[in-house]
Image (cartoon, rainbow, N blue to C red; front, top):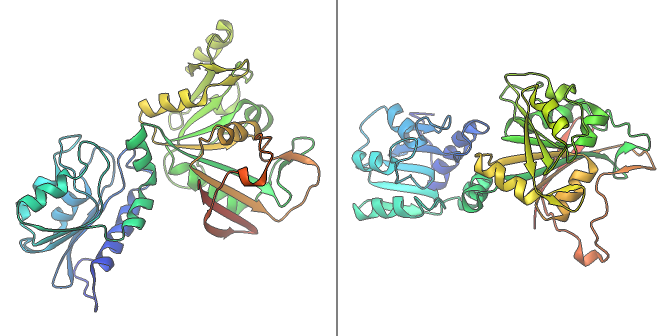
Length: 369
């Protein structure tokens, strides 16, 4: 808090505060990064801020605006290198230089080619002591989505599914409501809230008729994408119902029947024609590239099994979230199908990052190794 004083304060202490502030922008700043900033003098916080929303002031500007006293000779703590270019807002590094701080402490450099060390160089060239790499691992993790997107132009892909202890996402009849607990369902809606888009396959729409909104939590709904090579789904499905707060598009294979396409377009639903891989599969890398061009920096894939298998088989998953329910159903539908792996040493590595509990379930959060 502004005016707060602590004993044994370190750069790490103030950077942790900046990280907590940055998290407040989650789900609102895409395709920008989450950034927090703290200004301190003599162990006191005299200003702080974070990036609230894409197109609005950056964290440094908000911190400066909140300052309770002169910023000359103060120390700035910023989770990400200050921008040095004109984008939606003016360069933050110029605002920092105008304040004449004694030091600037930065969590990590910005991989954006328009920045990429230029902000740090500008500070040092003006004689301002600049320290980098403070809590760098935490700062990198904070913006893993942004870093992948800015480096590759592709969205960060999270694959999420709920399964029983014996690895089933549904019974032999296809019944799947509900594998997980109400608490886990609310967690899933929170996950939707912080992603730009959510994707399911046609079979999920046909079997479950989902809405794919985040109605159980506060926040914006993601763009909904239905992967439907041959437009098997009905334009009357709930996911296609007019909703000004939840837009839906369909990704179909090139050359899909014109009559089917017109049925969707007549309801105001955009149909994207994507290249084929084989007779029945959509070219997923092409789809991801197209989403990236639309500034979709994060994609949540929720199934079903065929879609999950395709994303894993093509090595397109960055993060894996498995909701593990304390149930056994025996024979049923596997969470993941055949990946063509015949030796255990060829298994896809997904080291756990954290394990949490929601209701009776365990939630396993892993990243691609």
